[in-house]
Length: 252
Image 1 (cartoon, rainbow, N blue to C red):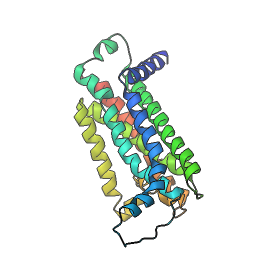
Image 2: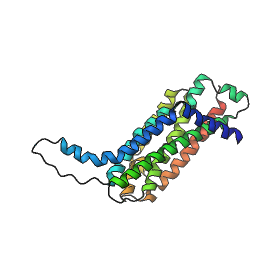
Image 3: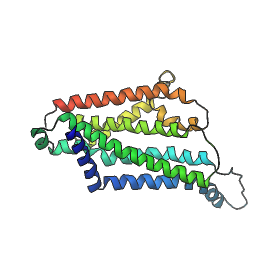
Image 4: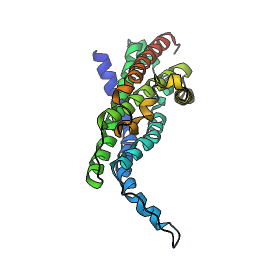
């Protein structure tokens, strides 16, 4: 346990020293502010760019417009996050920097679990920052009451955790950054394609990132996503287990 805690701290400190934490926090903070502001000013921008003599009637912006921006922009933020952290295991494998630590007694399991924990912490804090800023600005700038805000946000957060485990799996599988990105991107596309199939859609973890607005407007119930959540959790556990097994057998 001491080795796990020490290595996790080392990973978090390294994220600070390499400015990964600063980059991710800055991006998530920026989007957190932009989400409600964009929703607020978009109708005025559209009116300003309309040709002379043409008038349109637009509904007043509301809180749902801000959260629409939140979930739309979160896809971009996840991509940025994966790009920043995709080398957390892949780059060390390609450079062979883990050899000395492992030969000195550091458990291979500790390496993977510590790296997962450090990225998990950064992802959670970044996501909470973006969510809190969006919530605060939305409450101040816009009107409208919505349902299931916390649950809906938690679904998107869990989907991000899933992609983190896939990213680590890809890093161990290919031992390079490009392989990690390829596996993560391919996995996302696969889930997107499977979600199109009606019989599969009910169970698809991709719904955690596509049905968020439906939760906010009560078009779907939170219970509709219980099965995708369970499947998502099972895949997360499976990915971590496979990563541990592969890394244990991998030649460094």
